[in-house]
Image 1: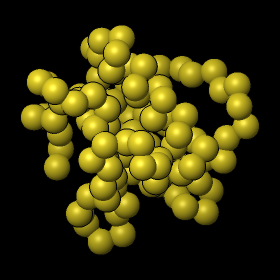
Image 2 (image 1 turned 90 degrees about the vertical axis):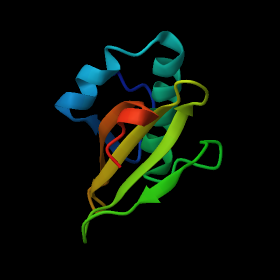
Image 3 (image 1 turned 120 degrees about the vertical axis):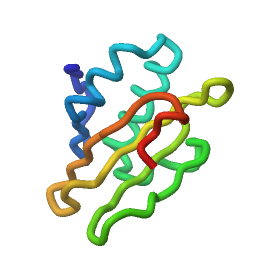
Length: 105
């Protein structure tokens, strides 16, 4: 998926191949929420702000910096998971977008 960036961003946000495929299956409401989250990640970095429900840092292997939040609550609940790949260069990769039930955590 290609996004045109109209604002100057502080962080670069990319999608893994699997997350890119997952976005194609999302309905318009979830996709809109995802785009708002990506905008916040680009502006604020891996901590997108208090407006994102259930935001938390995920436990993982040593040296990994993985996080998630809910995009749309309800049944089903949709989540987004991302990883900080490089803090110095400011790169974030979204590696999962989909239902809470299939989330990789």
